Length: 464
Image (cartoon, rainbow, N blue to C red; front, top):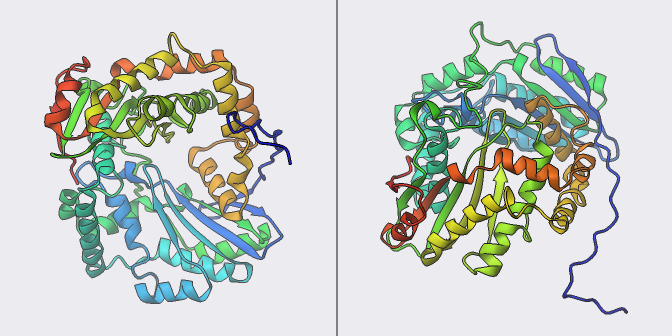
């Protein structure tokens, strides 16, 4: 047995060939998009319904309404009570997965092939014919208020909310999907009924089926379940002020947001940090270059920011950066939690790394090679199951992306060079305007933060 040299990183394995399946697409009589991938082998199918009714559609004075509506869908649907609905799902061996993000509601079922028609019927009842009873609304609202009370003690949630509010204000993306206690107090069951009536429109939805299903038979089952679904005569707009979230931020018309905001947590041993700015939408032409740039900067364990703060400085267990690619311009952020005494220098180091990668220390060939490997070597594992393929197709539908988006990802990333990454960094990384949110012991951290030249620190709280 040959010895293993543990002082060196292992050599990357050869590239794996990957082909993402093309979906059979059609549009039903009511406008519902239907995408199907027949994938035999196991008698299992995944069904995903994508509706562009995420938190960005929340009214200014009622953040959390989209998520509240989604929570109410299976609280009694069709002719079944909430308990009866759960029992019906359990009898066919499935459960409903509900996800509400900034841009969309995604409802998912994974079930055996023979139960697909029944599962579609249940999904249609949940989506199209929910009861939305006032008594159920009061109970669900109480549960959400209690959950928000718990989240007030989570530094990461406080940091994330203040960060989003700093970048977007009350515009789309300026709050967490769960909303706030104050907005829930103003909300009524009638608000949920109206949101469902005006926003849930089959012409804007896409139903995806992947697995042991034949496209024509699946289409007939879908028509039986969803064929009676009709949108409102006065549908909600496709987004709250869609298009006004630009690369320079939603608050430009009101002046630049304060660059340094502190949420005081007296006695905290650590400071939770968010550092970043509004970036770009998923449809940007620089998508692949930004993904590779982020991998070098803070996208994996050996990335610059993690090595600097964890390995070199010993300030944290881990640090990461990310572009949150959305339908409109989403945020770029660096996220970490550091020792209280290291807060000022940690922010200084992060801002220094942001400046360096677009200036005097661009990505090196070794960094690019390693980051390309982390992005591409395991990429096919993202699409091994029917559910993973269905959720991938959901992203194509949500962002109106080409069919070959996933098949082209690895070749596009491998085709980039240092010049491409540097150009993307100079265009889309802006350390001089980055907002810094620190959740920690203000008395112990403000002095060091004040010395960074970020302007006057604003004391704030998260509206949870």
